[in-house]
Length: 426
Ligand SMILES: Cc1ncc(COP(=O)(O)O)c(C=O)c1O
Figure 1 (cartoon, rainbow, N blue to C red):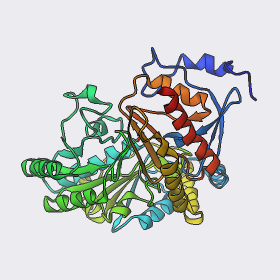
Figure 2 (cartoon, rainbow, N blue to C red):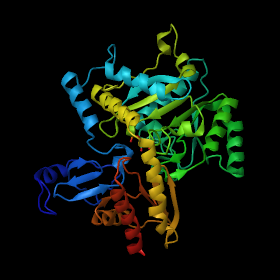
Figure 3 (spheres, helix red, strand yellow):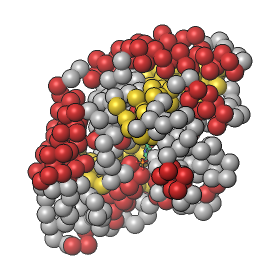
């Protein structure tokens, strides 16, 4: 039911005092918008207003919201079995999904460990890497090499491999375990620095962790596939495990189904989440190559991976993920991503040269306008709502990561909103 603009529903008023919102200074944050429902690329607010969604719910809803094929799969599964524990029991949706994911992965990345969030998938990847060495009797390899601009999640281990200075967890510097964090080896200086770091610390390192092709939450920074080939070579040379965190880049976002594919690099461990269930429900996977799995294969119980989340391989989430893979198989998603890339190049071009605009860049279905700085982030976010779109700038970045199924008209309205808001700002 739609209600008068500005009059929130009863559940909103009575519940808001009891939630703690994400990334929000609760004292000063503007009130969040009550959502009644979603549909395709639309968010419908409780007062009836419709916003065109430019973010796809933190990059998850790649086929748009409420896709009927996914909804039907989840409804079928709900009637059969919403969840059953994964300890000592397995089920069709999980095993089917594991088989299908293994088939999509390059090389022998074929052993799937399920969890429920991206951060936890990263924790599991790090734990696998640490224990890979412990199981070989090597205790000194307990650090990771990670990158400036990187973001890998909000749990304690994942926070420690985010950019420790410019990242959102900078406040925890000195409190979290310290890893080696350097610039990505993109030019002569950063490549030399990366090499020096490896020479000095390789013996203490369990692995290298990177978001391949796009560092997302750290500032939507792009790098070339050759950087990833360089990391693979270095990992081989120093016998380090290479972890690709494809939680953002996985499932088509950058133009190929997985970023590792575009780079022609097989990592030792890969993490996926976000678009895995197309934004339907929480699910994540950490997928290991045979050589990683083999390090845990033994007669010794202590060599097993001590991990097992309660909602591991949730059947509803696995059903959603299988249905999402059906859509990737049946529908021309990568062509849609390429079309979105072309439209973003064209539609965001007027931002180039505007005062305060530092850079405009596009990769796949990611369009970025980087500003010199944003002083009033909350105010800027509110201006997008006034334009009838949901776009959520952060840091000094305005970005669009729409559903791949967004219509040309809806995408045009998103890009117009970005251009309008920037014009009015100047
Ligand atoms: C690359 C990357 N890794 C990990 C995460 C953490 O995922 P989650 O928010 O599901 O814990 C994110 C979330 O934005 C991400 O972009």
